[in-house]
Length: 349
Image (cartoon, rainbow, N blue to C red):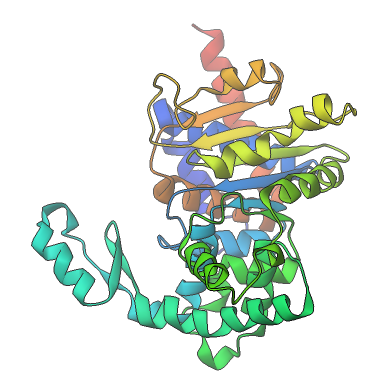
């Protein structure tokens, strides 16, 4: 990149004027304001973002200090690992919209597990990782160890010899998070392939269920993580999708306030990327204002909702943020100029 050139940030400034584009631009600016001012950012990742290779941009962002904590589904956790060790075995199905039941049955018979337009190879991914992870569980059972779900995966990904990598290790967000020792919660980890595999070993009395710390213990630990992350300028909340990966960690603020009866800083920023439309009783489609009534956010929290596909928006935002990190003075000047034009436009209305 030429010195002084920030092509992605400049593209956003030039083109993202209205609708979801404007929300993306403003959320990006506010994210950088927060990080640039010394704040932290906590990510909540739902959906199948790891299978969609979010790690291409998320892993560098972790290394650059743009992400400071994570809440992920069990599926996203394990699928980041699968992309590292079984990348060559994946198959893509761009015509999936036109598949019949018979087409998907053929995919099953090929021992592939389809996720929209791509698929995870059972033998190269699930079964290969199983050979490493299950002995770790057996050893923990024998020794009476108890660990959080993600800690087993941190140890696993750090112990895999590089010769077994098929994907680019620089694009594995799990590896980046493990090296950075990022605080993490994996709420509802039972609802994942390896959650099911673990349950089967518990059923056969080969592993003790107690070797994995519970979701309640995750929340108790998050109390402490949040207090550390929220020091100084505070910690923001960046959410992809909805569901438990978002609702679980955002509740830490009211829980500290009401259940622990301790003082706590509110979340300092909120952004959600979701294609779920606002509907009756839907968490994924709930507007940020609803969170005010639960004391998760306040009326002063910068709030953004981007109703779009996170596989399109998140990499764009992360790439622009990486440019800001590399050239902060130039980025600040571009953002300041854009905001000045916007204020003048608003003054005319």
